[in-house]
Length: 183
Image (cartoon, rainbow, N blue to C red):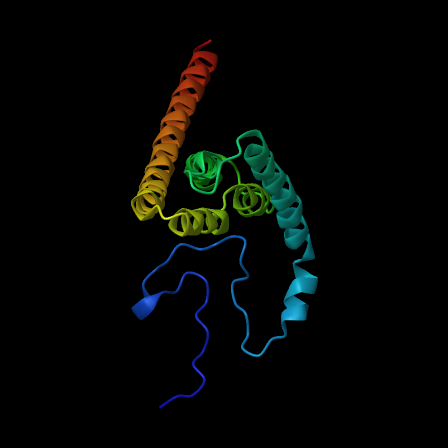
């Protein structure tokens, strides 16, 4: 029985199945490699994530200040922020993966940083706990499950809107290229 299995490289999955490759991740990380060497090599990615996270977190904080709630009520600001963030994440992933040319900083800055800082699972859980502590278990359950379902639907809608926008853009570009080629 092997005690030290070889790490899977990017694109390798169970039983050799082809998996999507994350362009932001190193293709292979040798076992036993010290974390500090990885941080030294990818400090720029960490910096753009931190900058994006600061912006996203500030926007989320602003939403909470503008739309405060009592702990015994549904936290509408948190719900709206998470749903809007889910929609934007679905939209972003279509553009990052299917439309825009690859760029080292776009997904870490916008996806992980801005939208990761903007959306908030921890506050969603604290809000659910506050509803339970206020003696409102049915409302807490509705908030818990409703946010999850509506958030997933928002991601799906973001993907659909992104794909639709990409298709319209491709059609317009093809028509423009055809007109320019015909003249």
